[in-house]
Length: 190
Image (tube, rainbow, N blue to C red):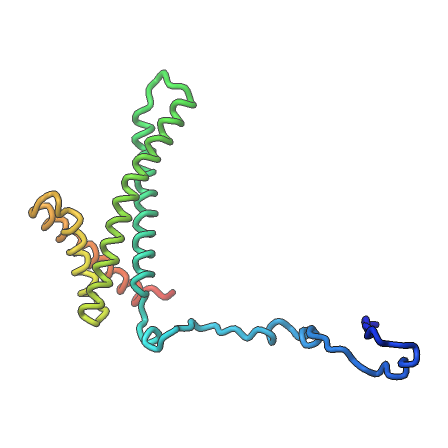
């Protein structure tokens, strides 16, 4: 039986009016959660233009490429540091000293290479988003030009020759990556 509060002016003579029912705000919550919350399964967009474009926004690109660059660079650098730390160990070193040498070398190389790869990812994301905005098209040309510009800008302080070589390497690397992605999409059923 539920609690039926009585008013302060209630007397014993008013017992014949107990057919009143109090409001219960939780009475409709006895339904399954699936019918209570009908959540959409497709992505929701604030503006209609966002739903038409089938690509990541510039902020998502920035986060994705910078994060992937830093993470992959840190893993590669840690592996390089591991090899350097093992090579640097000497015959009379204790196990603690060897482990310390390996950890120091892995941390230093991982941090250095990770930061460099993260900066390259940051530059590439900015260049690619700028190209998409300038050309108002999303195709392979944007990616290749962004790779060229990223390589050239990254090595610009080393001189024009180094910038040109790095730009060519960046453009070729991005071109191969985009072409490989298209080939995988076409021939590998996922």
